[in-house]
Image (cartoon, rainbow, N blue to C red):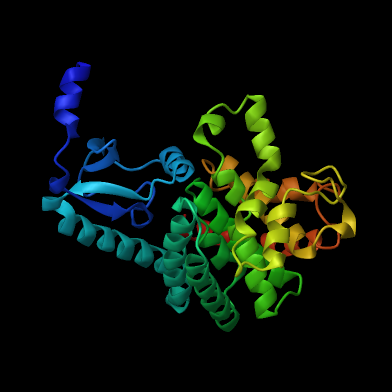
Length: 341
């Protein structure tokens, strides 16, 4: 197809033919119920066709560009919205089947949280109102977890395998909550700060301009990666309802117990305890993502990497207790797979 033929077939200027839909409601890697369009210079350009899906790298691109909406033709809007709701219900039921009916509230709250965290990352300028919505959802989720006391393998099962920066942040938050409780953190306010810090830990990374993130071997990219904790703090500190403890976690999540982390190279007890927990959760989720094609061994592989640390990167007082709970969750998952096979 020539460029001219492509433009005639895929570009429309009739804005009255289109309606916007929040990108946060369109799940990554779910099949699209109709063609979707992006709006560029008042022109509507077909982005994906019906039956296609939005892959992870495009979602991360949209986050870096603060693209909050996609567009569908008016004739398909209602059917599109109904189909999205049906897909969401199917995803919820599939997860409930996996984790048990007793954990339905946890699943439903996770789905709502995921939409909100996508809104947070897609916003060009984060507002205190959005933070309030997020904090209320986080508080409700933590109270549900404390009430239901789900098993460790339930946390493992609700982790997303989509490698968008928003869903990675959700995974890190859920792991940090599990790890925090494993090392004796039970105060709701402390757990809320831990969860919020984990959700925002990569906020600065999410806002690295696409012109830089597209060149991962460049000096500019290396500088941006090394600076993303402090950049995240700079973006978040003006929002009055984000606590100082959350900002500390964002600033320190790449510091290492042995003092060779970044951005400041602090060590040992100079690192905030909650930052240490998020650091372990962050590395563990990255290890899972790197091995996600081999689901039967990815948890064991990630655990082995943590076991080899020997106090270099992670606090040797926290790590053994976290490893214990991880081994418990992985053991349950392995036994379940053996039963099904």
